[in-house]
Image (cartoon, rainbow, N blue to C red):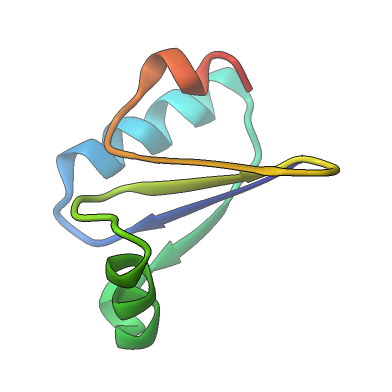
Amino acid sequence: MEVTVYTKPGCMQCQATKTLMDRLGIEYDLIDISNSPGIAAFLQREGYKSLPVVFVDHDEDTDSWCGFRPNLIKQL
């Protein structure tokens, strides 16, 4: 399983997501979209309107969500 968190500085929900993942020992890649306008545009095209955006790649499928979702994080 690979977890990627798209975030930006000053985002409270992003910080809450990272803090909970760290507390639970979940490893993740962190991508700051403020340095990558192409990634921000991609996320918007995919329909995401808020941060963080979390992608979880499993062996055969990918789950994703936006915002601070402790119930989903705890299922990882």
